[in-house]
Length: 212
Ligand code: SAH
Image (cartoon, rainbow, N blue to C red; front, side):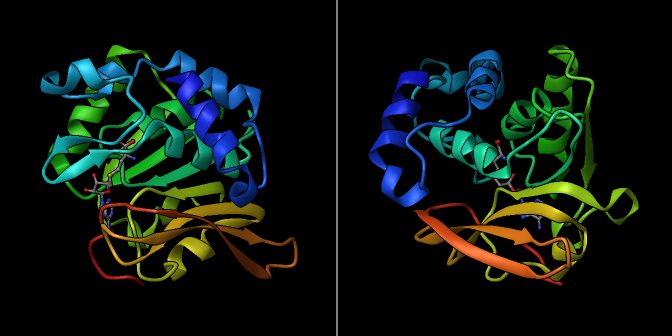
């Protein structure tokens, strides 16, 4: 799986602006057992570089995309990161190896509960889960050093921009659900100015609910 991520990073280097990902990110991808986040019916594909169904019409993202989005966030050991779209919990688990604390929101209660169980089993103690609409973010814990959205939104939710610290990054797929979206890297400058750059075409399940 790691080799396939490296190959795809190299193949897409002109779009993503790097020919390799941060070593710490690759180490986290190596460390987190993806099979623990994949349903039993798909165990034989757990380390294949593609998305897999996790029930409720949702998917665990492709490992290359998880690695790339993690890298784009530029996570640091003292960071507190918000994820919208817990899903299987895999992306949160990868982030949890790199930062101080991960806060992850999911609308489907049973997915959130399953992810919680996986974190407990693996003893990943720095992840907090909450059931709710990620469009509103997690105001009680804001502001964050980085925000990652793992479902496709039509536009950047305003609440998430507000919950981003100056100097922090937001990585989010923007566009039509399922078919084509742009993976967008949003940066909030120290003076609060927002800039956004499209990195790559991606295909995510939709972010449901009302964009606020
Ligand atoms: N990060 C996940 C993959 C996420 S799939 C992983 O590593 O496995 C997208 C997830 O976003 C789905 O579980 C879906 O239920 C959730 N989702 C969709 N809209 C949401 C919203 N408004 N708030 C929170 N979660 C949402």
